[in-house]
Length: 228
Image 1 (cartoon, rainbow, N blue to C red):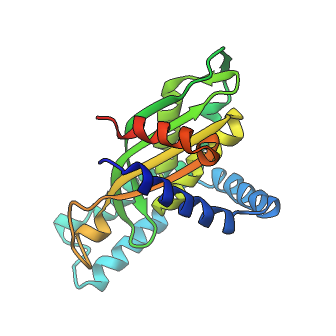
Image 2 (cartoon, helix red, strand yellow; image 1 turned 180 degrees about the vertical axis):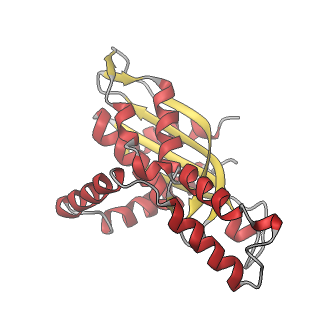
């Protein structure tokens, strides 16, 4: 998908303005980190998930004990354990090992595929993430950017928060001059229910540092993301 640069700039500014107005104070950021640390210690309660799935099946009029559904609760529990495994991981750890490098141009990893789960309807949204940064004397392994996206995706969330979360980690762990995250995805909750518009893409972006303050740098990173 191609973004018009001027439109993208305006939408990025609007998105980042929203982020600033809704930005967490140092106190609230600390509370979020404490909550995440607590989540890392909590294993998935698969028996509780199994019981909940049986309740749902019965509530919609199914026989949870028939052959075809007998093992479904256990399968769903294992699926949730896998799809929500990011709740019990710290994706930022992949950014802890960096290397000194005299390189002051953009580093961009495009089209990182992912699947995450929308927290509103517990239906998946699938797409690609573009992650870029402007180093400040140190670089990180390219595969680590993909690992961050993969693990951040493995939790219930909205796309807007996922975008901000990856950008937060880049900014905090790498100390970059600029960080850029653009995510494009299709949401099952729009395709399978409600409005039922399959094929629609939702694009979110979070630009930090020089990519937010400099029109030229913003245009450069967006043009690299859009290049096909």
